[in-house]
Figure 1 (cartoon, rainbow, N blue to C red):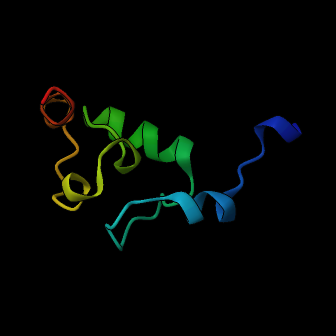
Figure 2 (tube, one colour):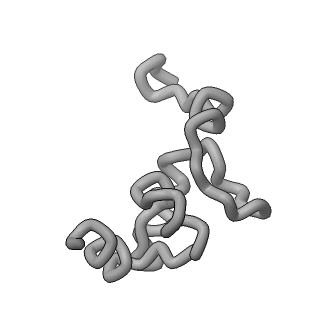
Length: 68
């Protein structure tokens, strides 16, 4: 695997704001984005903490959050 394509899971975990504890994708940003986009959602790191805690990761919630 090319160095530029290496996943730095431990480093990513330090910055991951996801509070969903059983999540198997924490620190694996490419898997997280793929999973959420497949469900028409966005990952936790794109929401402010008070919104992330609701687990509503929908596109609609994202737009409403940043449209205020």
